[in-house]
Image (cartoon, rainbow over all chains, first blue to last red; front, side, top):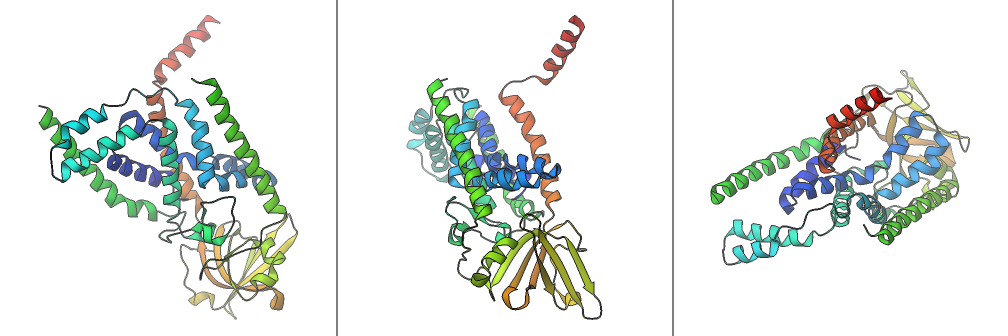
Length: 200
Length: 180
């Protein structure tokens, strides 16, 4: 797996792109780390030299957490803690109407973001989306450590996907994501400055 | 909060966790027949290598394993790596010919206990060994350190989300200890 810094960078880039803001962004970022939460039992059992426990309990749970079924189950469980805590949605539809008559790339992007925000209705969806993006990023690793079994419990090599871009246990993921991260921060800054100017 | 919904969610997670453990135990005791996709090598462990020797013989395989012992012979320039499966009481030897000229990724020194991805050709039935092709060291400590750094970023965000004031918690604790 890539490290959590890489996953957070990827999550932040996508939250800017998809217009996921404020508290929703925090839930989305938790979702981006969520499949790795079950690595903690592995970490503990390996630290305590409990090989059998690691083999029979920690490893299978961690393997299944990096699949669509695992992400669904985890998102379902973790969303319990966030249910009902989100503030009412921004008035995406009103915003839509305001910008619908305007043209240009910037307004099209704003329109897309506004439409998207009306679709983000539950912490479960944010966590699920984040979890899927986590295993998507993990799929960029070389598959020598097993690959990502998207359709667990089906255990065929054809379901283990890898784009063979970087190795686990290296800085490759961070280095490759860094330019996109910086660009997204700059773009975010420009949009934010533009918004303040428009408001004033 | 809808209680029925919460119970259902806990139930879903419980079934998933127990089901994963159940499948994991079955796969550990009775591993599924290894498959491969296009030109990719078979991804297996030592036990699979023994159990499905007829499937993977003369095929390219990949092992992700901590090594138990190694021996480098300078005269023949051969590195032999020993990997054991203590649960099933089996072991294999992976042999790298022309080790000094071998292209290595991420490796400074071979070390006992470190984890490696090893690609090789299985010659198990005929010679009882795997002929090493590629080797990569998986430095999981880098992942762990960076992941803890990620955790350090996430914890304050979670505190912010739930509006938990860490300072207030500390003060309250002091007050209660005085009271007692």
